[in-house]
Each structure stands twice: as structure tokens, then as C-alpha cells.
Image (cartoon, rainbow, N blue to C red; front, top):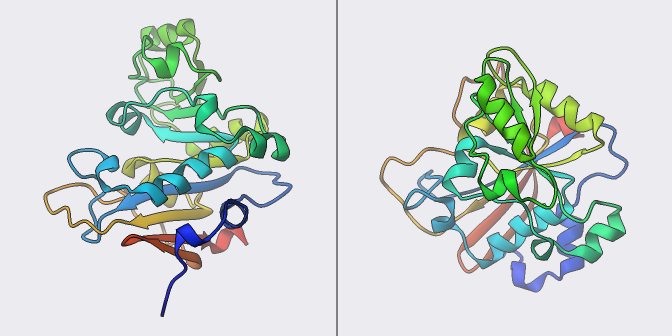
Amino acid sequence: MLLPEARDIDDIELERLYDYPSELSRPWVQVNFVSSPDGAVTLGGKSQGLSGPADKKVFMLGRTLADVILVGAGTAAIEGYAGVQSGEVRAAVRARLGLAPVPPIAVVSRQATLDPASDLIASPLAPTIVFTCSAAPASRLEALSAAGAEVVITGDSDVNLSVALAELSRRRLHRVSCEGGPHLFGSLIEAGLVDQLCLTVSPRLAGGDASRIAVGPPPAAPLELDLASVLTDDGFLMLRYRSRRAG
């Protein structure tokens, strides 16, 4: 069976495929990952080693269409996250959809280990949200708040992701693009909070001991998915799975 080439699909059709449901009344979580065929989530320690042009285009489209970007603190540090810049997202699309000029980044960090002086905290266009817990050192929470982050306590000894998503909903940030990492994805699966998975399979065998895309305690039952779309480009396979909880 021949699969559609990503390069043969125009931007309008690509947006239609990857857009969020309309008139959302709750956070709708899309998770984005790239993986090697042998299951590695990184190559040379970073996901960029597995990516390609079409995959990056879909990844940036996810940012364009999102109200907020959700990411784990470890991934934010390893991948060198900073705030989203206006040139990274398509302004005309965001304006048409009634979205803010850039999506804020929401970081999940149980110990609030982010550097207050980093670009992610000190100088984003949209203030970074830090989801943490009351067990995090008070000095770190104060430093992050003083640097401009919006610090939100969502639990006692760990981050409660259901509470975190409720906080996003209270801010009317319903289009949630989760960019990893594996522990955050595993926690979302355990909590049954995944609505869509956009998974790119890279044509590169990584070997080694890299993590898989989801790590953590298993859910009470597997999360059932339906295959919603398949694209290919230069050996890359871009799969979009829709959770049956999403309807």
C-alpha cells in the first residue's frame, strides 16, 4: 500500500489533519514523540538526532495550533528549552483561531529544579508556568516566582497532573501539546489523560540504552487507540493515533 507523502499535502490539509477539536470545554492533550524503529527516544542523548524536516514541520505545527506546551523539566533541560518566539509559530493561523500570539510553556517539575536565570524562565514572551508540589524547596519556588515564572502547586509530594490540567482549563488553555519526556508521558498514560499521540518513526536504528517514549507505572488497563492518519516522507513514518476517550 502506498502512503501519502507529507510533501504532497499542502499546509491547509496538514492543519486540518492535526488541528484540535473545536469548542473544547476541557484540556485536550496531544503528545508528540519521535522514536527509532528499535524503540529509542533519543540519538546522542537528544531527540533531534532522530528527527527530519517533515517531522519538524509537524512538530512546529503542533506549537502553532496549541494554547500551551506541556513538558517535563528533564526534557526542557536536555533539549535546551526557551520560551516560544513569535517567528516559530504561524501568526496568521493563530490569529484566525483566536489564539494568543505565542503559547506559554508549562513545565512539570516535582522539585522545581529549573534555573531562574535560564531563557525559559527569565525572558519568554509568555510567562512560563511551573507545575510543582509543596514538597519542593521553598527557596526554589521563591526564586522562580521572582524571575517571572507562574508557580502553581498541584500536590503535596508529587505533581498531580489532573490538577495541573484543571489549572490550565481555568486559564482557558485547552489545546495542550505535550512534548515529553518519557516520564511525563508515562504519567499521563497512567492517569488516562492522553487524547492523541503523534508519533514519528525515524529510519535510524539507534541501539544503545536510550529510553522508550513512555516510562512509569502501568495504567489499570491499556489505553485503546485508533489510527487516525499516516504520512511518510524520506523514510520517516508519521503516525497519528486518537484515544477512544477523545471520541
